[in-house]
Image 1 (cartoon, rainbow, N blue to C red):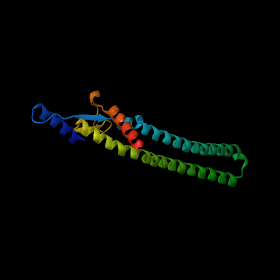
Image 2 (cartoon, rainbow, N blue to C red):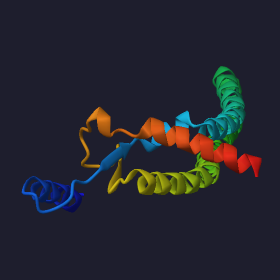
Image 3 (spheres, helix red, strand yellow):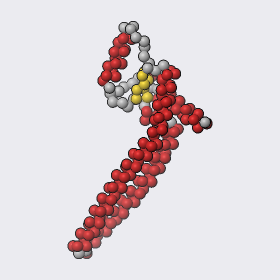
Image 4 (cartoon, rainbow, N blue to C red):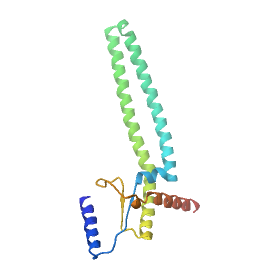
Length: 175
């Protein structure tokens, strides 16, 4: 990143000295593009419904564990030592299974997100590249990349990319 910034500053110095052509730089917020585009909104909607389904399953299991724990605490004094230990082992087993289900759900959501967004990013790459060539951009940066702290609003091309991406998707749907 430091090399990139150094190169931009060097290029700016060459421009001011009249030794190089002026460069055109654009900056975009890729997350905003995904969340604002029609395809991104559809993907997020599907992911949200999948997330909600998994959350409900986990919440049901958590409530089951809480109920079992409350009953164990209520009846602990009435149980024999052996029976109480067996119930505690069962509770620990339920908790371990719940944690495993949580990890599985997190993994499943990450994979679903990757699968849903990968085609969008692939298409966005085409759209951005075409836009850069058509409009003469020398450099397009991602707004949230490390080391990029501030960008002039005039350099932000996010809304144009969203518009072009939606047009691209509409043209692909007609084919």
